Length: 167
Image (cartoon, rainbow, N blue to C red; front, side, top):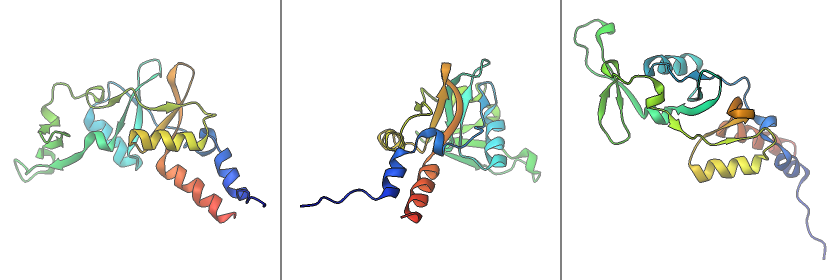
């Protein structure tokens, strides 16, 4: 009895590594950036997450849209837009006035100990790590936790789609 072999496109897909699918360059955010500025950077760059780095460029965390949970504009104190108060709804449901927060640097809101991989990590391992951690992005780091790229769930879906088209 002859066993079926995996299609070539599947083998090629499984041979891909973080370096093959990662987004580069990766935008990093200094840990002393304000939460307001980080929100503006995300909006302007059309991204939903970025590594947070210390002064030496080492990754100390990751800030993602799920860390913001929900941004809302409360009613204006006056009719002028600049008088609106920007708020953050914390995961536990508390409304936090970001503008008045004494600890407004992103290091107080980011996820510490982000999941990261080396550039040579196989795509299947990356996908499993993302599924296990219930996350949508993994940082690709080199020596001393310096981020060089990011692999998102969209990057993995793009690789799967390309493999399916080449069948």
